Length: 230
Image (cartoon, rainbow, N blue to C red):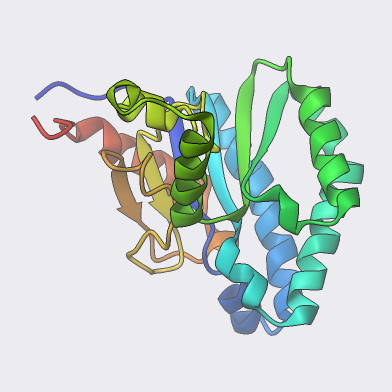
């Protein structure tokens, strides 16, 4: 059995922030802040290991239904990252992209995301794709609408043509998807792109996820035989 190289693209479902906060006796909003700081470390581990692109599930379309105070805090956290943290990603040579339904964000946040993408677009040490206001089914429906609007001929429509209309167009499908928090489901995360991804489910709550566990997952990934349905 041939060993796999380091995955070029990794998807990550960052689950467990609120439960981590409850377990540590702090407000649940602090769990999200701790989760963000773990994400920064995770990205560094990944790029140092040879990963080229990380796709992180930061805020789903369903998350808009959470308590108003929590959604408001998450928007404030996003704005703080865009205003105060993006320069650090830029200095580290990381390209940042935001994937999802941007129309649901305030004009200010939309402008800040566009500015961050433009600032980092020529960086080459790694790409971080942040999935915000993202849902896999919504993405597929949006792609179908674009195809219809463009009048794409039926005979011209194949998997590559469809993928070119997804929000992730131009991004390699994830070789590996990791979900923390002890939950074994994908929760509408990249259903098209993750069709042949290797899946790893960790019991660890996201803010407690360690470099050692990440490297152990990479080691296990290297042992798996990927057949892509063949």
